[in-house]
Length: 342
Length: 276
Image 1: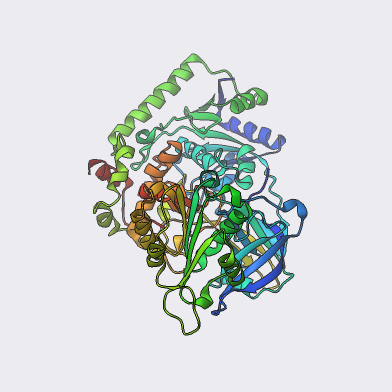
Image 2: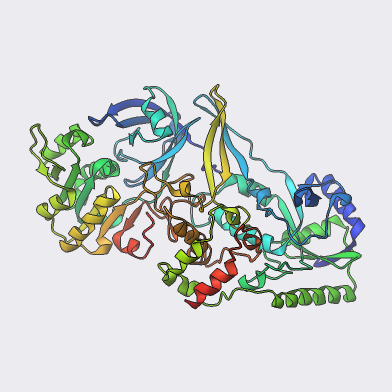
């Protein structure tokens, strides 16, 4: 099935079907901290009227804190990394596109090292993205190859048509799911037209939002490495790292051991950030990125130069979180525009 | 799926204190399970793991021709290394590896090899020299310059003595300042001693391991001797966690020291930011 339609309250049937199939159903849930992705068991728990979640859904596959293994004294105890089948419903197209970039990190086809923790969860998940209705003032997905109704990284793309939701398969996995579930009705031609018109309108509405000019940037950004621009821009930066924690493509992590005083403990993986001086500090005291300028530059260069050199990808999906949540209003769009004009 | 984060259990079979300062020890490790034994090439590294303290990356100091064990020479600096230094023979620890690339052995065959090292960065060069001597017919003339602050800080003293008597390697030892004790080697900093030894650049590759300051002053000497940038081979270090190109901290521009390195040519580094 390429396209299917369901009435909104019938999402309940989709959730029930998922539960019967022993799949955990994650959806956007409104709570005290805003909307977050949580496992749900009924339609009532789901919030559909949100622009985007603060914490990117990468945490479903790459949790902020994860036990890699346990130990007792000097003896290792491996943890079970079997993941449950899951359906992630309602993530935005930008965050779905970001998963493709994370896949390239954790399933690095060029190296012999694959990350089983991430991949187990990822391979067992079905991604149903939800096309955007109202882009935020900081959204710029269209500047980095995305779209408010983009399909990259999704198995199925849903669009809110008011009374109903229209679903479009974007992968073989999504197509098979839609066929097997038997919950989706064939949409009328009129519904498909409304969906397409909506996608066009939303994308058009983004023309009013300031966007960065990325064209030609990756070819010239390397030459800007020593430019005084970096000194100037760093003056405001607090080095708090919020931009990296909230970035859907950032994947840096730390590995540390925690022990309970009785020689029992865990080896933990936790999110880390290139914005912190300890990130690169050598045991000798030497630090290759000793100042904030070098660290801010690393963040931008990693996304717009280094990943381009390695896999020809810009590791930015234009979600705008680093702009929305920066405590000193640093705006990556301005930075990119300035860099592109240098 | 193979889990690259899980260390293989190894037993500390022997511990040798290497220097007068007593902060450098060599650990001889044997695999607890025969099937875990891995093959590696000189220049590669591994993560040594002590549960409760963590993991640290170290160059493998043994040669693949030394069968059945691994050697790591470790300076006592942080919590993992402190715990290692306090460990006794027989303790079970962990090793993850081999990681990273190696010295360019295919390119090195048939070439004269110049080895330059300072301080305790000599470890993977111990591996390289041992490997070369065990495959002597594959290489041309071998010239090595190895320096330390004073004689007591040189690693592998027994082995150095053996190599000095060996006719198939020309080894020059150096110390920074003239020591009080008898010293038959050179006195001076590694770059200056290298200049004095003056190995020919023709049909030669240079392997350089040492602290950043030594590398900075050694490279111009090699260039002056006529070595091309692509024939100067450096082994780098950066802070690491995963060692497999995912945790994101050891990058130098678009390259990861753990995956694309630790061995780079001078020519490769010239195109990367100096963040190492």
